[in-house]
Structure formats: C-alpha cells, structure tokens
Length: 262
Length: 69
Image (cartoon, rainbow over all chains, first blue to last red; front, side, top):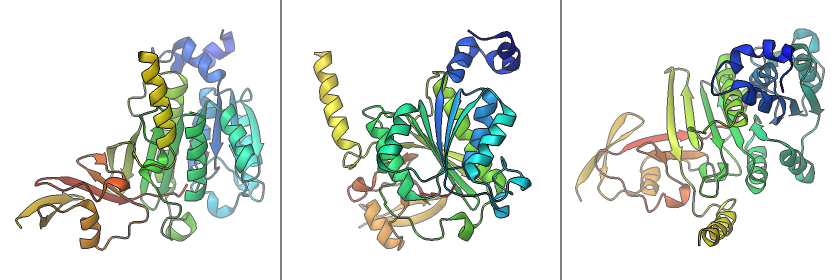
C-alpha cells in the first residue's frame, strides 16, 4: 500500500492507467541490476531511481574521469577520481533517498555474477564489451531473467529486450561472436552524449514496462537508432536453432510443455 | 543465370538469382565478425546465412553489432 507521500510523489506516473497504484507498488518492490555505469548506465539509472525502483544494484570497476562527463551525465565535476559506483550511489540518493543502492566496484564474474542475476527482477546490460555481454546473456538465459541490452557508438545505438521465453531468441542468436572488430570502444571511436543517453533512457523505459507487467510488445525486437539520419528502425530477431546458448534449454522446455499439454 | 534486384541499406544492387547471404558477404567482401543481416525486417541467424536465398525485391539491412556503452 502506497503512503500519502508516495502517492503525491508518483502521482503523475500512477495516473497512467497502465501503471496505477499496483504498478507503482511493483516498481517500489523491485530490484534492478545495472551492469556498467558509463553513458548507458548513467541515463538509465537517473530514470530508474526517479521512477521509484526499490533497489538498484550497480556494477562497474572504473573511476570517474573528466572525459566521461560529456555523456555520463549522472556524475559531477567534484566526483572526478571517485569510483563510478560510489559517485553514482551518491547521486541516486540525492534523487531518491528511498532507493536502496548496492554498489559493486569490481568486474563481476562467475558465481558472483550469477548470484546478482538470480536476485534481480530485470537486468540491464550497459557494458562496453562483447565478452561481458555474452557472459551476462548466458546467465540471464539460464536463470530466465528479462535482459535489456543496450549499446551505442559513434552516431548509432542499438537496444533490445529479451523476454527469455523458450521459443524466444537470446543475445547470442543475434550476435554469435566472442570478439568484435576493433574501434568499438568509445575512446577510439567517439560518441555523443545524447546518442548514448537515448539508448540508456529506452532501457529504463523497457525496465519500467516489464516491472509493471505490461505486455512486452517490443520483446525480442532490435531497435536501431541512427542519429545522423534521425531515424529509428525495428527488426524482428528470431531464435537461432543452432545457438550454443539457448538451443538445449529450449528443447528441454519444449518437451516439458508438450507433456503438460497432453 | 538471370539477375535479380535487391535493396541493401536502401541502395539497389543486382545479384544472380539463387544468391545466398553467405554469397553476398563474399561478393561485398564483408568481414563476418559482428555483422548482422536482416531480410525484410527480420534478422537472419548466422547459421542460416548459407541456406537463405535472396529473391527479387528483397530488402536487406546490413549493419555491425555494437558493444560500446
């Protein structure tokens, strides 16, 4: 049950019939794992904390640098040199003191990453490398956690939410690579703040929609943003029957479902 | 063999009938790593590239998966 203060604070969003008091309560009760606190994570976390997400778990092993500030808009000049997660946690508290934050200042691997994915309601992949992306996808698929994967470089951005249903694709179906060509990192290729901000903001929007149990009309659809052309394009992504990450669980689950139906 | 006309990223191209996506990567000398092909607004998994044959009027989106954040 929402308190009077919560009702007043979140009135504009709970006035939306698709959200309502129940939706707001779901947001307050939910835990979101945000992996990567760069440009995507900065934008996403601003909106998630503001919307009243109950707990944010933020993960990054970097420190704030002056060259981050044009696009990693959650940080302030005085925070240069601090760990990103501590600086971000401070900003989250300034936005919404009721949002609980767990700051993890290291690169999560193996069992630790698995535990964090397991405890999350939704996972946001805001990382800057393909290796982490594949690892996060594998765990989200295994543990059936909705995964919202965003990326941006140059004038382009990509975002997709995976619902992890048995017949749905995973990130590896879309990108079956363990390496990507060089010049994929922001420090080599360049990036503009609003471009990465749009993608991070879309990730926050998708998280809010999943957490308020709205039908995921855009599930498993890849949205491409071209800032030069000022255009969005949406493509269907289908399951790769040969995918080394999701083909076996699919077979097992399909067998299970078939048995239930009979 | 007869030629067909397809569109790749809004540009017209002529290719032989029966050209697969794998053939197209060779014709265009495209590095496969990180490469994503969508045929008529649907992404084609890489394992299906060699068996996906192009038809007259097909619209292809060809782009790189990006990982920056």
